[in-house]
Length: 316
Ligand SMILES: C[S@@+](CC[C@H](N)C(=O)[O-])C[C@H]1O[C@@H](n2cnc3c(N)ncnc32)[C@H](O)[C@@H]1O
Image 1: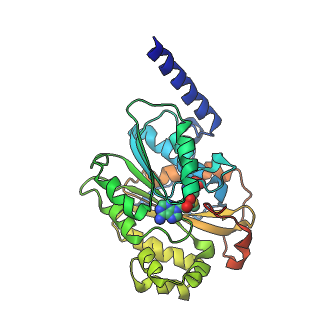
Image 2: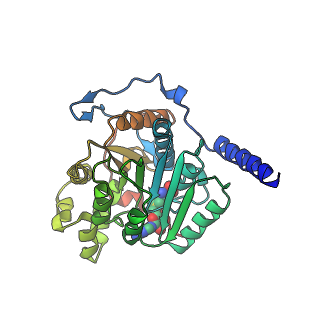
Image 3: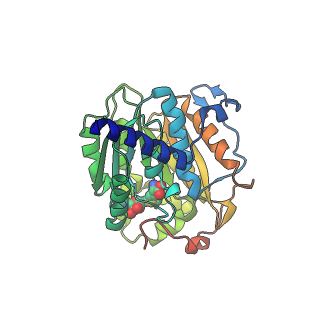
């Protein structure tokens, strides 16, 4: 009886959590136009307006929700999982994904290097209801090392729908890590990637990084130097092409702006790599749903000095 009551209570708190976090309903987006598939990719015209940095977590969660409606299962890897904006937990991807309802995501691997941010992650997880047959592993570690254990866990098989959020602050995610994730599956659809490229401050980061070996680890070789010779948008295009070369069927970059700096200033590009041709359509739907909340604006580049006032995640 006690067990029954607990289950009921758990179900109620899961429903409450889902009601509190904004969830996109399939019926909301079913009527939207679907971009066409052209050859081996999906054609999407220029996007009318950007997503704000604080909305990027909703983009990921809404996209995953649409995707899970098809697969009904999944594994979520979040290599850089601490909260970017601690007072605003609704903009925290790991929290939104853990609280998604129905709870189709069956396993979570959440990694965070910063001690305080890791403590926040653990607090958030402790506040979650227990869901039967769900495994959540959190690790205080460098994801570039822990990724080996994640991939060796046996939970990501050829048939498992798997997603990896690589929401680094600047250049912390090593190219070897991206490659390991992309090459893990031998025959099934590759692990989907959501890779955040720091478009808005890439030149400042490259200049300020004294130990150039860090840039080699980030880019995979010395050709990170090309970044110094091109503009911000071309830099993200170069990285997009590196990810395309890993053999994904569709790789697109989705601009993300900062509200403080205005709609025309791209902070990040979220590079989405997938082997499902339905996936970019779902991302388009999730993106379009969210841009309803922001004013239209032309995408342009901006001087990187401009983002001095932005506070980055993990910074106290
Ligand atoms: C941009 S924030 C993540 C934001 C988060 N996805 C959200 O939705 O709010 C990047 C996080 O990665 C952490 N980090 C930096 N280097 C790391 C590494 N090598 N391994 C794991 N975490 C790292 C930082 O401490 C920071 O909390």
